[in-house]
Amino acid sequence: MKKEQVTNIRTKDAHELTHAVHDLKGQYAQLMFDLRSGKTTAIKDLRRIRKEIAVIHTIIKEKLTHTS
Image (cartoon, rainbow, N blue to C red; front, top):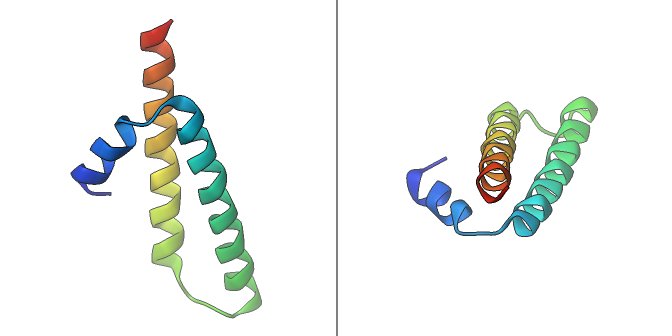
């Protein structure tokens, strides 16, 4: 994930980030299904999505601890 993307993510509020995580998890599930059924070999995409989810979760926790 590039620095511009992380900066863009940091500008969003926690609700938008939660929605983004939900969408990414859907994409991840679809890629896993395609991988297991033999339709794709996009392991790099799986790793990228997992990392994006982790970054967003980290930013959400930072926002929640700073606002409390």
